[in-house]
Amino acid sequence: MEFEVLHRDREGGARAGILKTPHGEVHTPVFMTVGTQGTVKAVPPRQLKEAGVEVVLSNMYHLYLRPGADMVARAGGLASFMSWHGVTLTDSGGYQIFSMSDLRKITPEGVTFRSHLDGSEHFLSPEKVMEIQGKIGADIIMVLDECTDYPISFDLARKSTDLTLEWAARSRSEFDRLGLGPKQAIFGIVQGSTYETLRKRCAEDLIRIGFDGYAIGGLSVGEPKSAMFEMVSVATDILPEDSPRYLMGVGFPEDIVECVGRGVDMFDCVMPTRNARNGSMFTSRGKVVVKNAMYAEDLSPLDPECDCYTCRNFTRAYLRHLFNAGELLAPSLATLHNVTFYQKMIKEMRTAIMEDRFLDWRDSFLARLQQTGHKE
Image 1: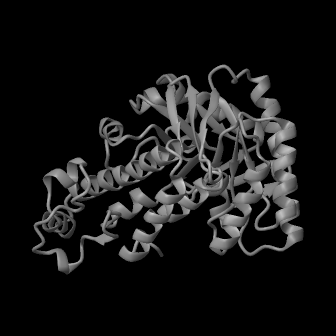
Image 2 (image 1 turned 45 degrees about the horizontal axis):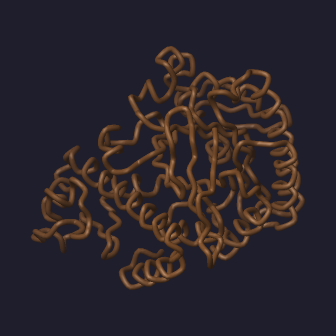
């Protein structure tokens, strides 16, 4: 994997770059669409490409349980298995393990957990996670880390950060031992909750271990937005300029914009696809919950400023009808639109950075969100 920063906005920390992988190039900033189980729900890969998606993120935990890493490997790897002609990234399952506290036990050796599918017991160590992700074959793979609750005491956060660093070192060693480097890139994950000293130490120690890129994890788990932005800045001030920086699981449009301004290159979140399946869409004129009665006779497009297939061909009234009738076409059309909205936002942002007008674009975009109701 190669990464190059092509331009930095002259008035802020925003940057535009290019990430080169075996399955193609990624233009940063990038929003990676989430396809947890090897599929973006309700949207075929061809339409993702047409929407401008460059990276699909899948989850190792889910693929390991079903259909199994060996099956994915026999199919030629994740991209081949899902017929995705683009870049892939797999998360290590750290967040899934964090979210099922009643089904797992964490020790320095790794994590013992019970499958949410059938209750069977499994054990994942940092080394095992590297082996599994090697078989799955994504272009970018993540180390096993521990994601903590918020709030958490300093002492517990320190112990968790220590464990994350120990696992990161073991992951790096196993990655090298398995010889995965020529075809895959490995990212370390900065943890430390909302404690500046822990975030700094974690970032510095990960740099000493050495990774192809660096993620910032454990945020957007209930902490105040101000704390999230502060911790992002703490990390990006330390992380190498010549490596990609990935903020995990943060997906509100305004948060993405703010964090691009703090030097983040990569983002992912289930929000645009999950919200779409519930009938909630992002548009240039505000959030539209199309199932609401007010759209029953609205024959205007979902977003008159969007050129996606959904907006070019269907009205709000029709989309409302599909949702209320329980038709499968409803989540498909809605998801396609939300995916397109995010890709358009990112493309505009990147253009603004390249033209040294990111701050003006940011201010205009955020002001519009406040006027139209995108904000929480």
